[in-house]
Image (cartoon, rainbow, N blue to C red; front, side, top):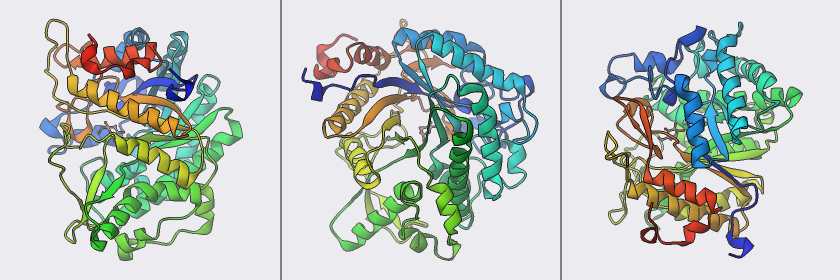
Length: 457
Ligand code: BGC
């Protein structure tokens, strides 16, 4: 296979998870509650009232889970740290037992030859900080930077990759504007404040990390390319607004030091002009960007769709996942090229990519066959390789998710894992997609050339 067709040397083959979605035991060993603990225990907030109290019990099964990662051949693992395990009140006293959990995890991953990539915030804000206003309190940049310093002082000697935030758009849109996610607010005025404070916290954390850290720090965003449903100028304008809201709202400040103009139109009198000092803080240079890619959106103008006035159009000829997302791999290539063109040639990682497809609750004869997820994986890795061939500096891929897990307010019904979890027994079974991914890793991508029906997996 010619070199240009191959994944680069040192490409990270990973899988990703997050603390609240897999760990369970959220209050163990002195941890404080997070907003997700509180939200999931509030009646009516999550599907069937399901919580992350047990999740997949990774808090106790972590050693076996690392063995499983090793058996699959993973070279990297992206996980998040629960802020309130480390600082039960969000600030102040450190809970050493909480930090020790992650310390052991990192050591054991490294002993298994697996690079840890650590996300410092994956949506589980300490509840004590929410009581002080959470992401609406403009002091949160300092709270976050102090927490980041506590963690990185202990782990940076062994962790090469740090992500400040996971998907600030989801935190603001889901947590403060539409409310399906914790803390569950529904307030147009709060959304731009939360977004701005998330970005300030990111900037402050990068600044704090530079004082003591020796490795690489970046941010993870979810990007969803927007395609106009027609060439009608109203649809084209709606597509621009949707793109500004979801994709450029975070990347323009980080890389260009300004917000997209469309946000003023979207938020109207809820928009507040940021200070130049804040924009400088946000635009600190970072070492890499993590891109989470799941789907694209074909967009049309819809004056009733609040507040962006844009709506997605169903593509009847395409396959949709169990979360209602269109499977469309070419947009992954396109979005990676777009990042390079708009923001520069920095190292990129696909930090999440995957699909909820229907899988049985229990393995059958020790097997779980998931042909649609296997196909999704192949299509997206081929799209990633196309991006590399076209000159994108892509350095790794993390499947979402290593395990079936707690899909936030959708509970346990949506299975994203390449490893099946039987929720009655918590038994783990690698699905066919995991076996295929192992083979991809073992052949450094060469097996992608073979059509799936030619393989026995
Ligand atoms: C999040 C994950 C989530 C996944 C699937 C991403 O938005 O980072 O926590 O489980 O998508 O919805």
